[in-house]
Length: 76
Image 1 (cartoon, helix red, strand yellow):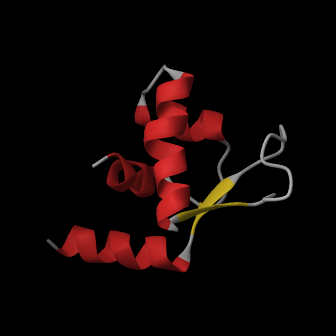
Image 2: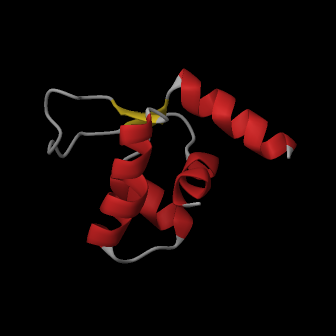
């Protein structure tokens, strides 16, 4: 699952570019749609600047729900 793989690499607040590089993925559109937007929609990831979603300063971080989901997924 893409969201699980994304949550595993999130360390604090990270830019989309750093997240994508950490996962070794190159296609920006695919990464944004399949990974970032899916995690945001599920409530496992949040924007640091939600009022400015296209800001160059935008960072992403795991939510409490994302942290709990990741912890339970790692126990499996």
